Image (cartoon, rainbow, N blue to C red; front, side):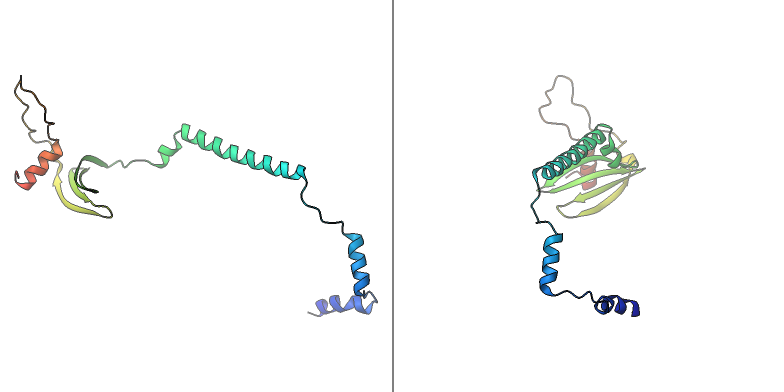
Length: 156
């Protein structure tokens, strides 16, 4: 604290006190007139920005070509979506295989609900019989999930 006080008051003791006019004259002579940026410095800044933007786009393109986006968005090893059925506007049922279990998930606009779990052997059961030869099949055949859902509901 004492050194700070001596540093502030010391020049006054040494006779280095300026009047306002002397101070203003000293500052005008020492400092050049402030000028705006010249065209050369603006060109350097613009070129630097273009180089940085080009590097960012180029590295992003290379990362995408190398498959970095797929490595970051890896799919689950143990989950498999077996089938999905829309049951209304922004509502659907999804059958997910998790190991040897099937999980029936109800999806809404903002929520997920587990509706039930079943053994995975339910899908390995008998499928719907194939139509006899010579008949036209204009209606699409129900999927394994639709068959399972109708069995769960009691054939409604």
